[in-house]
Image (cartoon, rainbow, N blue to C red):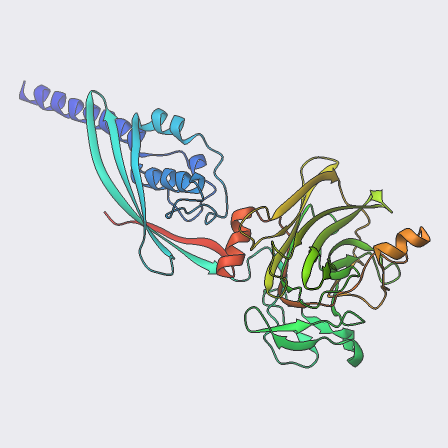
Length: 410
């Protein structure tokens, strides 16, 4: 009899344990797919889920909030967190708070109030997490990045790990831009005649479907001809651009010191796609001297992103301006890219002066672009189309926020 009772107790204990483990597993474990895009996080319990959810909410907050973190996650999480929370925990996460822990803003404390329903019971607790991120001056997607802070007479050094160094004037003394004071450290001053930096060929995948070109520009000496800030050319035998970022100054009119027509800066991004004017489609933005300080540094950014089998979204912006700083256009995809295409910064000796006036007068295009007469600093080309948050990181932080660490304080 005693043995039978003992066996019964053992069976009941094992059964109860199995049920308890099963319930705990349902309550505590999270399917990997919920947070599969955050590889640093072991998403196996409610607090990890709360952190993930908190980061998701942080990504969606309004830019005007002081504690806004949008943009510091490199990957978006396309998951319905509310449904997942209900399905797996029967609870809610509320009162999410964010606090920067130091002036640099690289540490964030996240507090979440969690209510969890287990059966007929309710468990409520508050938990806190620490999130740290670093500023990547040269993001992983960077093809090359020039800070122009070196003193080498022949080269500019690529700050990425790709070793895509640029050659000043492609080795010709008269074609070399000069060193000058930049936005940060040193910059290059291009004379608008024949100065340029040759970066090389086979840098960009011909089938690439995204691109970002960014640089600090000082427009103080920009002339009325279109000047090339950066471009990708088709080949050593066909120097027409596949894409180009260019700028010009449209002179104003003054009489006795009174401004009748303000001076205007115009920046454009072209892609060759067989349409538009002479096979090119462009998007441009203009700002007059009342809207932009022509004699100071401004961050110019062009992006390209394919959004369908045959279409692409292109944009140009002067990203450091506080508002109305971007223009976009939906067009057909670029064409003409090959393994032989090469990249130049500041101009190209194979381009001659082109002005809109002469083009209209002669009813022909002499050349689309000329060497630029500007100062350039911190030129970057990336094989992804950065969003507005990442671009603002480049403007204000000099790099892109990259999440490095997330852990729970309690």
